[in-house]
Amino acid sequence: MTGGARPSDLPPPHAGGVWTLAGDRLIIVSAEGPATILVPTERVRLLAVDLPLPNRARRLAALPFAIEDLVAEPVETLHLALGARTDPAEAPHRYLVGAVRAETMADWVALAEAHGLGSAPMVPDVLLLPRPAQGWTVEVREGRALVLAADGTGFALPAALLGSAWEAAGRPQLHHLGESLPGDMVVQGQAPDLRDDAARADIAAAELDLRQGAFAARHARDASGWRRLGWILGIGVAAHILIAGGDALMLRVIADRRAAETRALVSTMSPGTDLSGDVQATVTDLLPSGGGRAPDRFVPLLARLSTVLTPLAGSLAVRAVRYEGDVLTMDCDPGAPDLAARIAEALKAGRIRGQATASPDGSIRITANAA
Image (cartoon, rainbow, N blue to C red; front, side):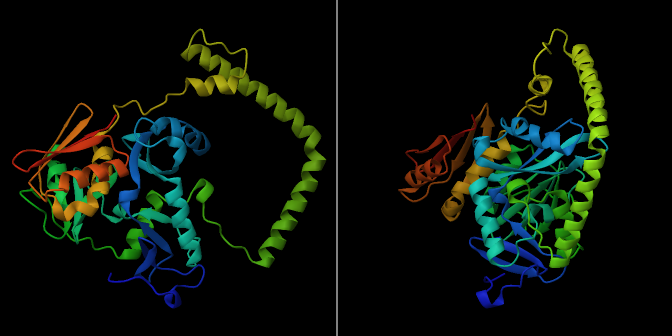
């Protein structure tokens, strides 16, 4: 991939193929298969979230509360996308979730629509990697590392930081693709991914498509389709007028029965709960606010730190990474005299609570707080 498509080369509406988003450009990767846009994983937080609720609508409603302790940004500034189950057999209520800033998502959608790809799903590019049974699948290309974990989540970071991240994560098993891994990282498996780009994109889109909710893809309908839809709606309205009286009575009976069942269940699970008011609001307040597991703060903090330090990656040589409490400490070799100041400015611009301190020998210590 050496350059973006010129305006005259852009596809007509609803064109196919796999495209990758690089800055403000869309670059064709493969002309095969349905249209899919790969977005940079650095801009998307991938989470495995427990949502033990009976249907998708309720899972979506509970999602902001379930992830608020797992992300650094205010939930109201984020676009959340609910993906597939990460492990249907062992954890049937655990789902892959993508979180991206709403303003970033709006820019991506506008770019896609301007280039005739408004109906294409958007997928974090790390999901194209084959998912390992254990540990990490790692692909290194052109100084960038993609990491897909066994739980279905993943992240991207500069290749120079990969070894330190691997050490800090407890040296998980590695399955390697692409360029050689840095340092003394021990590889357990190294086999090429034989799937073509279109097949990988199809599987990734099934795992998580970011085009949901306010940013859902709008599919065009032809005139005959609209006429057919009008006839269907007209017939449906007429039928509902005829049966509305009987339906209203039956729905009232069903609603009363469901309310009684809900009150009985809440009384069993949470004795003493006041159900005299709005039953729906009371039950919603009883739902758990998180996945029941300790928040995973290391990986999101490392991903954010890697993103803000990417412009300085060529000047940084990381010695070690430690994570204790809520503080990530990164020790770096000596660099340019102003490197610590530039790192501090990058942290401030990325809204990361931390600092960069230069030692007398020139080495630099970066600290970042996950709280």
